[in-house]
Amino acid sequence: MDRLRLTLRRLNIGKRTKLLHSYRGLIITALLVLPIPVQPAWSADPTPSSSWFVDMSRFLKSAHGSLTCERCHIELTAQGKVHPNREDPTAMKKVVVRSYDYQRCASCHPEAYKRFIEGEHAKELAKQKQAQSEGQEQPPAKLAPTCGDCHSSHYVQSKRSRVELGTQMIETCGKCHKAQEASYLKDIHGRMGVFLEKKASAYCTDCHGAHTCESLKDKNKALEACRRCHKDATVQFAGIVIHTGKEDISKKNPEKQASMAFVGTIKPIAQTMTIILLVFFALQTFVWILRELHRKLRGR
Ligand code: HEC
Ligand code: HEC
Ligand code: HEC
Ligand code: HEC
Ligand code: HEC
Ligand code: HEC
Image (cartoon, rainbow, N blue to C red; front, side, top):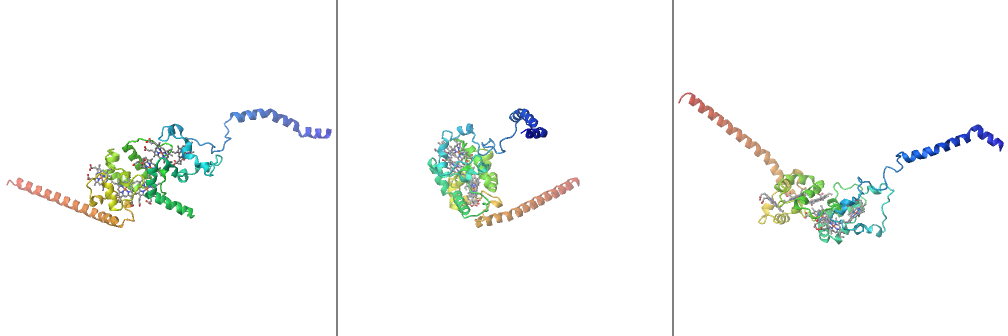
């Protein structure tokens, strides 16, 4: 026993422990006071910059502000799914717009849902989901929109004016149809509706339908759309090209591609002819003035 104590004393261990004891209080205080990041970089609760953050003051002012969260979310656990794991950073990064079951909207918005399901976008979405379930790895070049791509379920406002709705939606459609947005803004309807804010003009959805989003390649479909405002429109009138950009004309529309290609070649020729004619007349007038001057100076 004595020998052990002797060795310990020789090794100075007792003193060291005492020293450690007197520092312990200090270390603990420092840990409490200093802002040491004890939480990992991804916080368990979403921060305001996270897409998972629900801003309650904006939510309560929205069209859905009077609904409880469970009206739209209860099925999450009811269908045997579990709440996303708060400790798992990848769960917070999931794109919910792709996985939410928007059929739930149908209980309150049956018309909008029905039209969407019948429309072009839902058909494309079904195709993309089919390809995905068959194990296609490459994501499609252009994703088809779900309700959530065009509407913010938490913050959507009701009773927006026609101009407000129209201009907001052009940005939404333009995210995926850039070329058509650009040509629409150059068209008479775009200039009137967006730049002059005239509500009589046509926005994307007036011609294509908000939820059906019809292609309008078909002349009779286009005529139907024009007649909503141009009451005595004819088939020829409906044939007037709205989207005149080269990249606007669908490859599925060979007839219109041919006519736009024709316009494309004719245009520079016509422009050159006009310039040549103008120069010719200007020269002729100049020579004529010279001759008159010459005659006057000779005193005749
Ligand atoms: C009108 C239906 C509706 C109501 C009411 C609603 N949500 Fe949502 N919520 C959705 C939809 C739809 C999504 C999927 C993403 C999208 O479309 O914006 C979503 C997504 C979410 C997400 C995933 C992250 C995100 O924002 O995409 C969270 C978290 C969430 N909701 C929480 C809530 C909470 C909390 C409430 C109640 C204060 C609530 N929701 C009320 C429809 C609703
Ligand atoms: C491609 C974009 C787009 C998609 C996808 C879309 N909407 Fe809409 N939605 C619009 C636009 C644009 C309006 C504005 C009204 C208009 O222009 O006629 C609108 C209006 C609405 C309205 C209010 C007017 C009405 O018709 O009752 C509701 C409700 C609505 N959408 C629900 C939905 C639901 C539910 C889905 C999914 C099934 C959906 N929307 C998908 C673009 C879209
Ligand atoms: C419990 C019923 C209910 C459910 C479920 C619901 N909504 Fe609504 N929604 C409403 C009510 C009520 C309004 C406000 C209508 C008004 O003010 O005219 C509204 C308004 C809207 C509007 C704005 C319409 C406008 O005036 O411009 C859109 C867009 C919309 N909802 C989309 C959705 C989408 C997308 C979903 C599914 C994620 C959904 N709603 C689910 C009840 C519901
Ligand atoms: C998230 C992307 C996305 C958004 C937002 C979107 N679309 Fe589309 N749209 C598509 C895809 C993908 C197709 C499938 C055909 C294609 O590749 O163009 C399509 C097809 C169409 C078609 C039919 C074209 C055809 O070849 O049959 C029309 C018309 C159309 N969209 C109009 C609109 C309008 C109007 C809006 C806004 C209210 C809108 N889209 C919003 C992705 C989108
Ligand atoms: C005045 C009516 C009108 C307006 C407004 C309009 N379009 Fe079109 N759109 C048409 C017609 C008609 C076609 C058929 C092809 C053509 O004539 O260019 C078409 C074709 C399209 C196509 C291609 C369809 C295909 O088969 O390839 C898309 C996508 C499209 N429009 C999107 C939009 C978007 C996005 C907006 C708003 C920024 C918009 N359109 C505004 C009338 C309109
Ligand atoms: C929502 C209403 C609306 C729809 C739908 C619509 N237009 Fe127009 N359009 C207007 C307004 C408003 C003007 C401004 C001149 C006027 O008062 O006639 C206009 C002007 C025009 C003009 C300029 C010459 C003129 O007649 O004044 C052309 C060309 C035209 N539209 C073509 C079309 C075609 C083609 C379609 C169908 C693909 C179409 N529009 C669909 C509202 C619409």
